[in-house]
Amino acid sequence: MVTGSVASSMQGEPRATHDIDLVVNITPSAVGSLMVAFPPPDFYLDQDAVRTAIEQRSMFNLIELREGDKVDFWLLTDEIFDQSRFSRRQMWDMEGETIWVAQAEDTILMKLRWAQMSGGSEKHFVDTLRVYEVQFHQLDKN
Image (cartoon, rainbow, N blue to C red; front, side):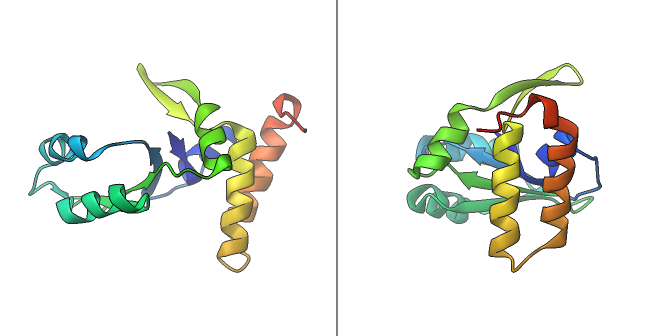
């Protein structure tokens, strides 16, 4: 599920970002497929970091080495909110490809959470505000 700045750019005001945040629910059996899908020298993906993230339900990174773009893979946790927002994800069409994206309400809540955790990040707060403004009439205010 796409989340973070890419989701807020899709749902609010677009802005440049060099990282993509994805919430994923993968198992250890997927590690080999990930390593094949993102091989060196084009990508940096640490197999041990992937396995540790899966075990600990934490996160790992994939880096595209030519441009330096990064994907943060956040493992789906057992937290009620995490499970709930993952179940509410929506399908979007992106240039003929179907992708899963967090709902706007969940993008707002997570951006506010990240702003608080980072000590008041203005960037996260502005992203939140723009999603709220653009999606206002479609938001479930409850």
